[in-house]
Length: 170
Image (spheres, rainbow, N blue to C red):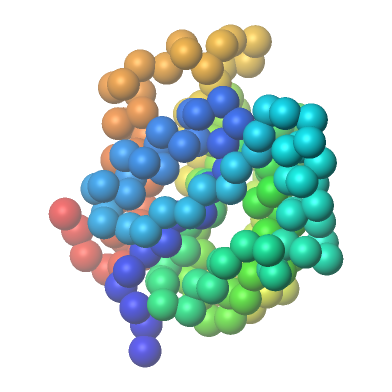
């Protein structure tokens, strides 16, 4: 039986991806789980340990059994997804789960990052449904160049994608 309770899993360094996730969560009534990285040296060491290949599944409760679809939101840095999302996808059980990837960045497309994410998710048993590219920070710009209207627009685009996956509309 497929649940209709979506889950958004995201990583955000500057807050852009987090804000899109928070707004989208309210629109689609999803549960949200954010991966965090601290700014202190000791916390960065702990972060790397928590998201190491050996420990990500035992240190973080990412049981996704009751959720479907699952939306992974990640910023794209130099053509790659955030390491925390990348490592999580190596451990989380996605068997039979419908998955949507939201890539947040300056570019309209990023086949390299999407391919990497999709391949890992499929190896974990997911049913890859779709992807969406969301406007993030412009190259060379501070993340604060986004307005509230930008965040709401991108969150609504993501919500429409999720509604299409779930088979109903707002």
